View 1 (tube, one colour):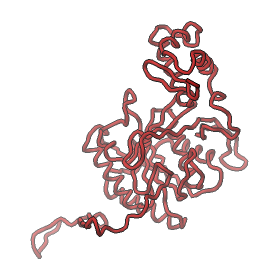
View 2: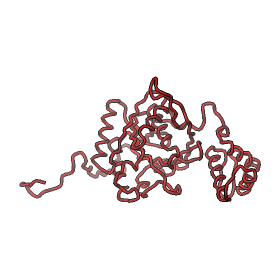
View 3: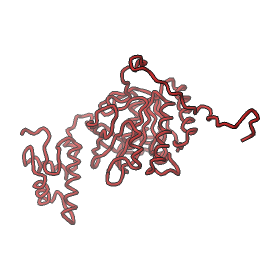
View 4: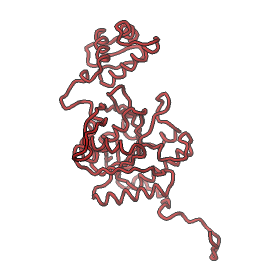
Length: 349
């Protein structure tokens, strides 16, 4: 740094990154806040940071591409109305696969932009530059941004330790800068669950920094989104979807390709949930229903073993297989269960 003949040297904040002065408002003279505006009814609002988490290969990216298409097209997302707007999808990994899914999932042309990039979210200048790029792009569309998706978060924090509270805090700060630069949009990042399914992977600072956490789980091809953390909406919400393999062509005259997409759990023909069960799970459901509206879980497991609905090398392995069947039935909203009992949904007591 060169000499400063006019006085002692001082640090000058980088242009465009100065922090705003703190401004207090008397509670009785607050600016009007207005009603809560939502991008997805009952779930996501502008300015929020949202985490969508799940296990590897568990359907989280398929769900995210469905959400992107629904918001950009203005069609409902798993039964929830949306606020139409431009969607920016940062495919930090599997760019080609995400692009194929978006093409296969969309129903009509819509303002969806995909970037094969890995922005360094912990870098304030990089976060600010990304916000400016998004604003410029949306000026071209003349449609405000509603959703910025980062898939996955881990690929956008190079050199950092996601288990470190300090490093996670830097990333959350970058996401907050991006949210401030795009006030009409929600910032959604895709991330993995921790070992053993114990919530979001990494430091608790990540969970603490988000406004909404959505967890994708389920068995086989029947999935659900559950609200696992929320600041402004109820946490007892469940949205169900299925994974379907569909054929599509990337462009006219191209070869037919197959890609797995997410679709609402209730199909166009109104097929009951039982019609989408695997044969083994359908047999297990019939067995459970034979016990009446409420059954002892241990008795059902023993009967499933005897009928060879569940087989394995040890009692522990058959118990785990039976648990997965119960999860699939629960995801299909056909039963509820706990450690001791299984209850058939809709059965008369």
